[in-house]
Length: 255
Image (cartoon, rainbow, N blue to C red; front, side, top):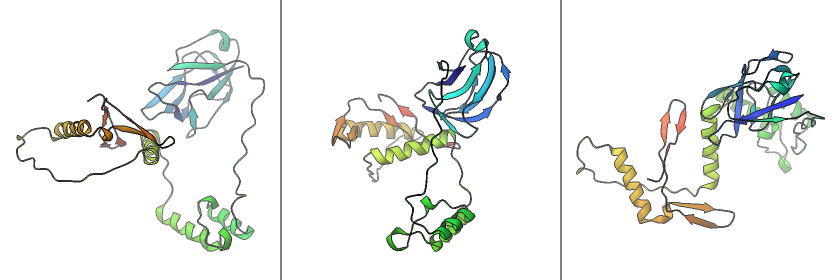
């Protein structure tokens, strides 16, 4: 038996969401037959089978995230050793599987202080106690806390799962918020002398570049762990663009 792993899909993409399986356990498939569709931060990609054989196991369900190098499917049969098809990205295949690691145990709520009746109420209302702010003595979660959380969730409606571009946008914004020393400057500028029909965005980009050259500390990497910075000579400028699929930031290199 051989294990087919999620190939490197390029452009630094380290994960993909499983959108749809086109095969099932027990299916006899041919090399290059579309096996699964996955969605990255860039697009939906159809991944073909690397060789012919029989599917004995599928790893992951639609909606789950698969990381590069993680198992996708297990094959058996002569084709798994002979027929090699075309694969998106760089393929990584494991040899025979002797034993599989047991699944990780589900997280417990052992660290949450709540009476059995309160836990039962949370299960009834489908409330995750880890998301509830306790107001009782010594951090005890009360029935009122659970009911208040249920009311808030009822008002905001069901959670919308982020996929593809929007998920990548949210992850990058959270990372930037944690690692980038943010600053904002607001001022007015007289642009009456600008000729009519001039592209304002291009002039703003030139102004930002001129500002970074005049004050190099604006174009620096900050290292919070070592409490230092790297002042860069090359200027890469990101421009936020609002699109129907979310906020995208194309980067102009070496402007």
